[in-house]
Length: 284
Ligand SMILES: C[S@@+](CC[C@H](N)C(=O)[O-])C[C@H]1O[C@@H](n2cnc3c(N)ncnc32)[C@H](O)[C@@H]1O
View: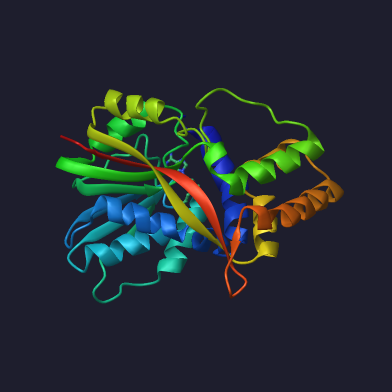
């Protein structure tokens, strides 16, 4: 079946790792939800679909923007993420759009009635067949419907990942390069390729903008831990089946390097410069 590998990965490996950080990823990525919601220009009363919603933080923000006459559905392929999203959202709240979550594969699921807007924070880079997925999603919006998605820009523009990856590779050796554009966090790092996918899926007025954002790290220690647990450096340590001593050496090396690319804030937290591709398009 489509996306079986990613479903298993997010349900059994990456999702549980993400959730074990107890909200740290959501806090770290909060500025990107803000950028997506702003690019989507959500209006009160709109029906919004959040793709690859994870633990649902961006869906919650969308529900605020859509107001009580709107509606938001968050979908994810991984059951643990949907369970967490439901638990975090709690019950209905006054002034906020009804918010629901469903276990679904965005590449194949059908949605009626159609949505006004599709949004996603990093939930759209994992499809086996991205053109099929974006064509399927185009069928789930009204005529004139639109989308606003965030994907990671190249590693070279994201030192919070590139530097830990280099430090880990110095300890473990380089990872398997894999196929170009294979499903994964960096699958959409090439804007020309991304444009070709949305064009082939029939979307119009496609814009792909590289936007710099400041991620929010809780502290130098937390960020060093996260950088060696999630993302490319964490994946390389897993690929190499690194032992505890190697993981600790990696964490210490990243902890030492962090002040070189993160800006400390007075409360001990950090700003980490990062770059995303902000993708917008309309269904025509
Ligand atoms: C990097 S996480 C982002 C989660 C969330 N959007 C956030 O920013 O907190 C990617 C999410 O996409 C989901 N995903 C991957 N493939 C999917 C698919 N085919 N359909 C729906 N969700 C998918 C994963 O299960 C995972 O929760």
